[in-house]
Image: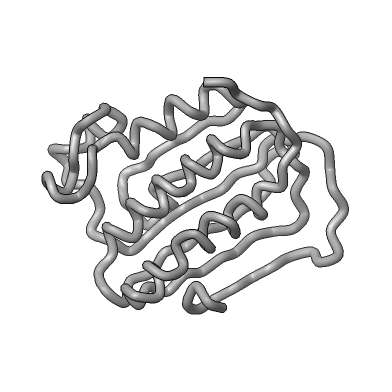
Length: 171
């Protein structure tokens, strides 16, 4: 697979993916909280692969929460060198006996009917090709289960300093 390296606005990619999933989010009455800082530099990466990673992780979050659940997505700068995107939900989390399989291909956490079991592995494999890193933390009050980190690239000035969108996917 060819990997392109383009300067992209990571917030735009998050918004595009949320747009793809908007109907499902609304149907399941899921509350979506976007906390996307506009004080980001662009990241040089493969946009299509980043979209796929976000799509997989957010789809997993949709599957993990009950009707009326919460998914939070935030972006921020860390150490001026990295742009980070954190994705969290208020689902039940992954059982402790399944944690060691989180990035194994074809391992399903929720049974046969819930997909092929490769969604967690894909972010790890994809990130290695485009200066990104996917990290997963056990569910705790200390932060998001998924954290994606990208090397900062050229800065693109923004009119707004910060965007916060709370409520359903429709805004």
